[in-house]
Length: 427
Image 1 (cartoon, one colour):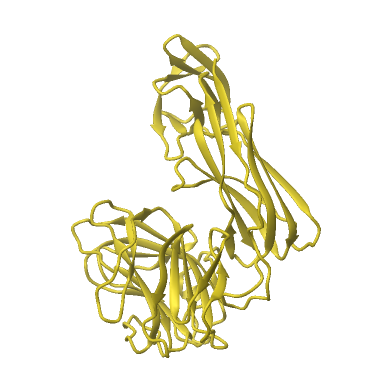
Image 2 (cartoon, rainbow, N blue to C red):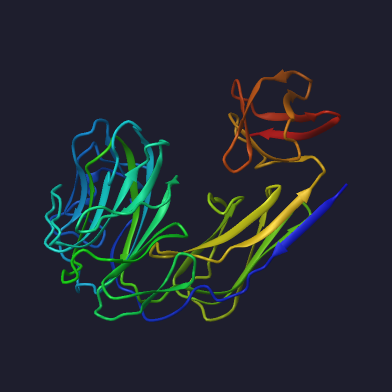
């Protein structure tokens, strides 16, 4: 039996402190309801002046727009001015293309505008009214993928790489009149912006750097999402707009991932926190797609050193990349640097992801059982049919042909001469 356990620890201060932030708009749609619940002629910091079109609904903590044919317009518009106006803006929102028709042109299917003198309807803001804007293309090769696009005043534009799934978009812009305005990026590193330029991030990937704005003399007072091209379904949610400068809630001084037997122990510590809500531990095998391992509540507000920990009960075979997503009480978030743990054990094994399990689904994580066949039986030996489906996070989902009655079952994995058994409890 050969075992190799490695870990890489990263120790640094990844969240910085400065002056207090001003939040101009915040809405996560967690209350559900109808789109009309989020619209007002005198909106607060979580309401729009207009939200309509394309069968808009509140779905999965987001606004979902459905464009079944290549016609029609949907929009979310804020025409009431921000207090200020802001001279810098740090925008974050979730964005996901649920599906799209590959035969329909989806260039700049969605456009996000920031500027002044916008109306509350679906009309397209002019260049003169727009301070900055970015577009989102529907993929022409893979349904559910998108690219971010620059849209210069003179036409043309540049596309980013393709992304899929729900992604956090960060759009930071500087209208202060000063160069070298600094902000904390989604990776936790400090970034700087020249006057009248913007950066765009998808998750922790910077896709555009120091791009020129459309109209430098325009104020930052209003914003609008406009869906007016392509065929598909898109969800936009968890909006947070604040000034660039400001207190970021945590000063993180250490973050480690260390194998311990078949598990990975994660530990981190902070020296100060301001209105911190929670830490979300995320894991990836390829530094691209991340899944949530677990959450730990933050202390909140403190100047005392705090210690936190979490165990990954089912790490992946091979490379496990971990990051912390620190979430503030106002919904803003930052990511830590990435740490890695390598789990390389030639011994075949599998573990249930949760036990008791749901009567309709059994999820497990296996190691070195690539060609295993799984058998589910009662304690008396009666075999029950199950369908095995590999998941994106390298786990395996077993779905019984019929819902399981509460009780105890045996799950056997067989690969050549290897036979492994686990008890399964159905609640």
